[in-house]
Each structure stands twice: as structure tokens, then as C-alpha cells.
Image (cartoon, rainbow, N blue to C red; front, top):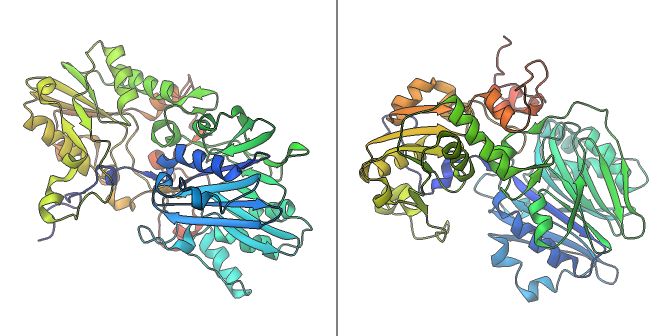
Length: 492
């Protein structure tokens, strides 16, 4: 029988109701056994993509070598026999959660880094983000004779580089990226150079670190920490750095300057809480979101409880500001993998209980505030609410550490179609009724901006961040999606 409501369906994995980052990227130059450092960096970035990973290295004696595997970094790139096939002092890597390409049906040919052989030598690239004009570029390139090996939008960059008339690979990369629209942080390598580029708006993150006499590029600072690298600075929006062991870091600006629009959801959910973004601790920002929430949406209750793990810092901030005790009312099972057991109907009906369990002794008889980072389709929120009530809670109040997610992201985040987003079709009160909770409140967009350090809130005339998933205001027009019928928000 079809579900009674478009949002009423079971999710075996509690994380299926979360937005997913596309990937994490990492590279090092000037250190022995560079691939080992890349494997460690990718392990620290595993939260950005669990579907597959790859590493490319270069050694003067053996040339370029690559390994691409499905699954976790720890299950593949800890093998000594595999890592011995990736020698050299220069390597880059990528962990993937597919957005462009065949979602959930990734072929090994879709796994990055991608490699190309040019007249002046080989190059490999790893890309975080989404190219919003990839379909148009792909059609043009195929008509001109390019033969694509993957379904990934990132492969367009390699083909554009191949067609460039520039004399060296960094210049060809500049040429290629000037044709690309959307969001991109790219790490690339040649036989001697490590290259890092961010798009002019700086939507996706990229940072620079120093390790001994060598250098590292990473999506997040937590990946620098794991290899003992010193965080130097963020690569700036629109900046390209070319790094060699001999000359160090050389910076250039290949794009027309624009006002940056970093992804605000990196602060809310994507980045690890121990990372630093824009000079701010991600953990501290999330704690401050909870503080703002408590000010904007107070409620009489007995216990503040996070939905683990992403709701924890905001719940701590909410509890501190409100004076209501904090408690771990929900415990997460850290050891359930995605291939736990065959998902039979009986197991499927267990749903979220496979990942989360209620601390009944703490919950029973209490008026509970549940703090979560977001509500996407609402399926997980309903199940958690039912678990809390089954454990004997007197009341359940949801407080959400982001504004309503009402629009899909086209810049490197796996978002359901707009009609599957709860906030796209319901008001806050309708969502409360659908979730059947005593109250539901989201942080305001201004409150979120205050929490990330913008004391005056959001500048509506020129927003300081990309917040399209909340506001429907896209800083780069998603031309491929518009061609396929997507309708932008009407001008107010």
C-alpha cells in the first residue's frame, strides 16, 4: 500500500534523513610516503563522504600510481600492501558521497581523484562541490570529441584542461575553471606541484597546513591535526595556490573578485566540531546557535536532550542559556555499520532504533526539549519523538539549530527534491502537527547569522553566506536545473 502521506516512509538508517556533504579532499607535497599522510587526512574527513575513496601519488621512479576503493578509508587504505603501491613525496586523495553522478550506484570509474595525461605530463584532480553548468559543458565537450569515462560532473574539468592551449598545467586549470559555474574547491597535482583552488564565492572550504618541510591542503583543519600539521591559513575565495617542495607556496588570483558566500551549513552540520572555520571554532559556533535558540524560543521543560551526535553542541548552549538541565536522553550506537544485516521488513520496522536508543531512566515523566541540527524530511524526527514518548516522557518539544530547509542545494550537498523537503510544503505549525510534538521552533536566519559572528544578523541586500537551502536565494544560478524545469523563488 502507498504511504498515507508523502513524508511517511521508513528509513533503515537514521542518517538517511540528514543532508550529506559530497566529499572531502586532501593533498600533501614534500614529505616521504605522502600517500600515508593522505590516508590519515581522508580518515579525518570521512564524515564528508563514506561511499568511496581514492588516492593518487607520484614517484619519480615509478610515475603516477592510483588506488580507488568503495567503503571506508580504514577498511582500504590501512593495508600495507596497498599503500606500498602508492610511493612518492606528492599525493592527493578524495572521499566521496555522490551528488552528481549515479547516486547510491557509484561505479568505480566515478571515484576520484581523476587522472589525465597531457602533452606536458600527467595531472590528477579531486573536487569538492558541484558544477551547476556541467550538463551544458558535457554536451559541448562530447560534441567536440571528448570521451567521458564517468558520470561525475568533476570530469568536465579534466576535459576542459585537455582542450586548453595554455603551456603548463596550472594555467590550463585556470582556463578550465573559468568555464565552470557553481561551487568548487579543487586539489590537483602534477609531477612536481600541489595545486589548490577555491571558486570566487568560496562556497566550499579549503585550508593550508605546514608539515615539516612539506605542505598540506585539506577540506578542514581537523585533517591537518591528525597528521600533526600546523594550520597556516584558509585558501581565500578565488585564490589559486601552486606549491612545490623547492619554492613553497605561490599564490595567484585567476578570477574576478566577488563578495564571498561561504556555505553557512558547514557551520551548522557538515564540518567536524573540532575544525576551525573563518577563525571560529565550529563547536563554539554550534554552542552559540543553541544559546540563540534558547533566547528566541524558550519553553518550560525539565530536560534538554540532544539528538546525537550533531545536535549535542547546540543542546549544551541551549541548556546553559535556559538554565534547564542537560542530559543524554538518547544514546547512539556507534558500531552499527551500513551493512549491519539484511534489511528485512522486521528489521526495517525497527528504523531509527538500530542507531539510537532512549535512556528511559532519564526521560520518564520529564518534559523534554529535543535539540537537533535540522529537519529535512521529518521521518527521523517522528521516530525519535515516538521513542521518547514510549519511554514515558510527559511532553516533547523540538528545537532545531537551523532555519527550515525549504530549498535544495546545488553546490555539493545531496538534498532531496524540493517537494520532499518538509519545510517546502508546510508552515512551522503544520510541521509541528505533522511531527505531533508539543512545540516546534527553528532558529531564525538572523539568529543563525548572529551565532556565526554577524552581530547585526543577515544583510538581506547582500548576504554574507550562501544560505540558499533556507532562503531560496542562489548566489550562482543553477542553470542545468533550470533547464530541467526547476523554478527559482519569485522575486519579492
